[in-house]
Every structure is written in C-alpha cells, then in structure tokens.
Amino acid sequence: MVKEVWGSQLKLTVNDIQRGELEFGMRWIILLFMFFGIMINFADKSIIGFAAEPIMKEFNLSYSQWGIVGSSFFWLFSIASVIGGAWSDRIGTKKALSILLLSWTVIQFGAFAISGLPLLIIYRILLGIGEGPHGAISMSQLSKWFDPKSRGLALSIFNGGALVGAVILAPVFVVLIEGLGWRGAIASTGILSFVWAVLWMWLGKERPEKVEWDEPISTHSKFKWSEVSSIIFSRSCLLTLFIGFAAFGGFAWTSVFQPLYFGQILELTNKQIGLASVAVGIGGVIISIFINRFSDYLYKKSQSYFISRVVVGGTSLFVAALCFFLATIVQSKLVILGIFILSAGCIATIVSIVPLIMIKLFPTRRGFGISLGTSFQNLSGIIGPIVIGLLINLGGSDKVLGFNYALFYVGGLMFIAGLLFIIFCRPDKSAEEAHPIDDAISI
Image (cartoon, rainbow, N blue to C red):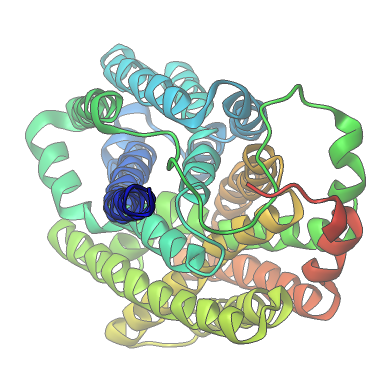
C-alpha cells in the first residue's frame, strides 16, 4: 500500500515537472506569436508613412491633408479597442486574435481599390477598426502566461515587435514600394497576417493548465459598469491614461512624419531613410528591454508599483521629452539620429508600463483595462498627426521651423505628463482600495 501511494505520488510529481517544462516552453512560443503579431500590426499601419511622398504626389496632398490621413486610422480605433477588449474577455483571446488577423488580410488587399483621398481615408479607418483591439488582447494573452515579476520583460519584448514593424522593416518597405508600387506593398503585408492566423489557430493556446502565482481571476462574466467605474476615475488610472496618451504622440510622429523629416530636413536618400529607421528601431528595442528589465528588478526588490513602474516610467518620459527638445537645436545628423534612438526606447518603455499598471488596477477585467489604456494612447494618434501637420504648415516655406514646432509639441506634452505621473500616480494604493486582499479570488 505504502509502495503504491509512493509510486503514485512520484508519478504525479514527474508528470507535474514535465507539464511545467512544457508550459514554460509554451509561454515563449506564445510570446513569439505575440511579437510577430504586433510586428505585422505596426507594419500594416506604418508602411504608408514610407509611401508618403508617392501618395502625396499622386493625390496632390498638403501636409495638413496628410495629417488627416494619418489621423483617420485612429478615428474609431479607440472605440474598437475598448469594445474588442471586453469582447475578448467573453470569447477568449485565442479566438479573438484569429478573427482580427484574418480581417487585416481582407483590409490590406483593399488597397488596390484606393483611387483618391476619400477612399484612402476610408481604408485607414477600416484598418484602425481591425487593429484597434489587437494590442490589448495580445497583452491580456501574455498576462495569462507570465507572472507579474516577469511581465515587464515580456511586454518589452512584445513591444519590440512594434518597433520592428514600424521602423526596422523600413528597408523592406522601401524595396516593396519601389518594386510593387505603394498599393502592392500594402497588400503584401496582408499575406503575413493570413499566415500568422493559420499558424495561431493550429499552434496557439489560450492559457496554461496550471498557474503558479496568486492573482485575481480574469472573469468571463457579463461586463458591468459598476465594477470598473470607481477605478476608471481614480487619480492613478487617469494619470496612467494620460501618460500613455503623451507617449503615443511620439509613436504618431515616428510612424507618420519621421520618414518625411529624415528626407526633407536631414536630406537623406530613400536608402538612408531605411537604414536610419532600422537604427532607430534596433536601438529603441535594446534600450526598452534594458529599462524594463531594470523596472522588473526594482519590482522584485520592492514589490512597489510606484518605485518600479511610476518612477521608471515618468523618468523615461522626461528623457524622451528632452530628446525631442534637443533635436530642434542640434546640427549633426548622427547626433540627431542618436537622439531619436534614445527617445524611441524611452517611449516604448511607457507603452510597456501602461498595461502593467492597468492590469494591476483591473485584475479581473484585464482585457478591458488594457484596452482602455490602449484607447487613450491612440486618442493621441487622432489628435497628434493633425496637430503636427498644422504646425509644420505654420512654418510656411521654412520647413525646418515647421518641423521644430512639431517637435516642441510632442516633447512638451511628454514633459508635462511625466511630471504629473511621478507626483500624483500611486497605483499600489488605488489597487488596494479597489480590490481588498481578503476579497481577492486567486487562480
């Protein structure tokens, strides 16, 4: 009898170890899928920035009109993000991601139908609706596989995919645009999302069988406003939303106007623009991963979101703001490139920290919480390109002056947000008040 009990316990232990090893490997496969998913997402939305000159020339667009094109992507993006996040909490993240990626394929092939400014704007609106929920749902998926102490690293790697899609693939974009035309180049990214969706439906997994950390359950019950309203209007939540809004102004600059800045102000060739964008992307990813590893280290030591997330995030935004200010006075092209590399890494850090705080504040509604943060980030995507385009036009024939106005706008917004974030945001206190420990339900 003793021998049988011992044997069964030993067998159970071995099975647990084997299952744990498999799930440890699976979480990195999940992260790899999410990395390539967000890479495709940002490639879809960013390739148009590298096609700016041929599109503006073909349709005879001004900077203000081009700003509207850039902004239109985000007009319904935020609404789609919030609705999609809540929707994914009901049907599951695996199924939701499959549907989204397939929709991108259809939308991207629709580029062949674009024949003027109105259809270009409609195309961008539809792409924004399709891509709106993706970031939040992907982060929710990752939060099921990575514990709170390692989520900073996981999300920094995930957001590295955004930089790859937005800027590191720039030389590929340039080759595709020159070889296939801008319509064919846009459509080609639709093939990537189709391949991703097929592989994900085959290999993807919703969640691990066993979770080894305590955290409130992410519920699939019907959404109730009363559950989240008090948290949404807390000081910590509002400031977290604001810092995401400010940081994403930098992303709006990078994806819509930075290629034009490189070409028209720094006078780089198309090939040089591609290489400069690669440098910004690779450098930004490395810096972001380093800062987020440091943030995770501080969290392990202090167990404080204020020390590890707020102080690190606010400081990163200060540095990014300083970079944008310096770009208006520095003359050296190499130094300006270094400035944009540093700012890209600092901004990407904020994009990783915002969802970490939203998960802390909304542990049982992760999809909704993250999508709320994403939606406010992307409100900046609506406002930013329009404001930047108008500011550049204010420079008149002096393009340098116009672009400097834009750089001051983005930098000033980030400086104010970073200052308020460090002074007033206290997510640990807000989460404790909203979710008392003795009421929490652990997985």
